[in-house]
Amino acid sequence: MASLNRSLFFLVLFLLLRLSIQESHHHFPISFPLTIASLSPKSQLFSSSLVAKTQAMRPPFYYNYHNSFKYSMALIVSLPIGTPPQTQKMVLDTGSQLSWIQCHGKIKQRLPPASAFIPSLSSSFSILPCNHPICKPRIPDFTLPTTCDQNRLCHYSYFYADGTLAEGNLVKEKITFSPSRVTPPLILGCASDSGEAEGILGMNIGRLSFASQARVPRFSYCVPVKSQGQSTANGTFYLGPNPHSRTFRYIKLLTFPDSQRMPNLDPLAYTVALTGIRFGRKKLNIPPSVFQPNGGGSGQTMIDSGTQYTFLVDAAYSKVREQVMRLAGWKLKKDYVFAGSLDMCFEGNPNEIGRLIGQIGFQFENGVEIVIDKERNLEHVGGGVHCIGIGRSESLGVASNIIGNFHQQNLWVEFDLINRRVGLGRTNCAT
Image (cartoon, rainbow, N blue to C red):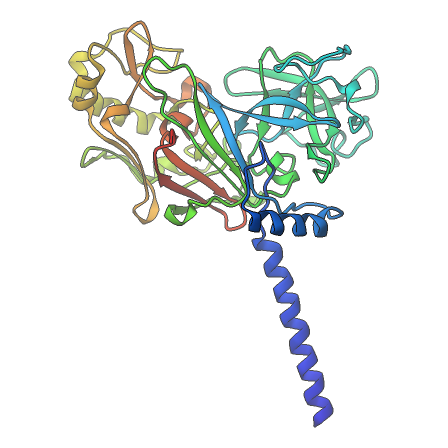
């Protein structure tokens, strides 16, 4: 009996140790510094001890840092890529999978701040050959079209909803924050000519996104409201836990197994269950099914930091436009469409028009809302014209509802990949 008791004791002890290890694996913060925040002496001691234990480990990395980003029409972060690091500007895009940078083949003695990445200056840079499994998958990956170029290197072409094309070679490169904080080689795009000034930091749930490859458990950002006359403002970006998360309210992410994949569905997006839209206290007469994928995948609702405005499928957009016309139709600028998408635009005093339209709310489960106050329900698009930042999805050639970054202003948005949820918390992002 004593021998049996000892056996049971050691079995229980083993199970408890295993459970403890699993729990620590899931709850340590992962964070890659955009800059290193100042730490208290206690935090520095903890961080140094942790680094010593994890330097030789593959991801996840147990670091916790944050920095600011520039917000204009997009969220532009700066990341130190390569060995030694070259600072690259990238658009934080929760609607994209592949991260890519602008590459330049010629050697320069000095790198200007906004320089393209120069592969020959990095000792950790490598190009994927044609026979790499990513380039020639057993099952075609339509989310990332790849071909073999004339040099037997893996070539990609990536189209975005706005018609932008990014193409180049798939490569592997490290993100080198410091000698002791280096990611393993991550698969990136090395764009030869995208026509864009910045690259893309792909943060959706696809297997090749930065979030997936780096095994980031959660990340968050706070998009500031630009003051009148400002072209840019500074926001805040966390990779890892957010100290403000106790104030967040959470909504579940919807997932779609392979058996439910549909032609108009983006299975890699952060899809949520939008339940309604209200103006003031009036909830519009829109069936909840309009905001959910139908048999063909149309109607999916996603939160996308890489899209500036919000776009709705026709069944929802028509109800929104009807309400706007009822509230402020006589102020509408007739026959005017901004950027081919926004047709609810006005001339005149924006404060007066904002009061007429009132507060707008995007409603989710459990009473969670994204609330747009009357003071900021209009966007100045130039020439004294102000538009409601909502357009028709068909103007982008998509059949989805997209909540863009304009309607994420003054809001903490946290993507919790471990618990499959999105956290929202109202705040002043400029402070």
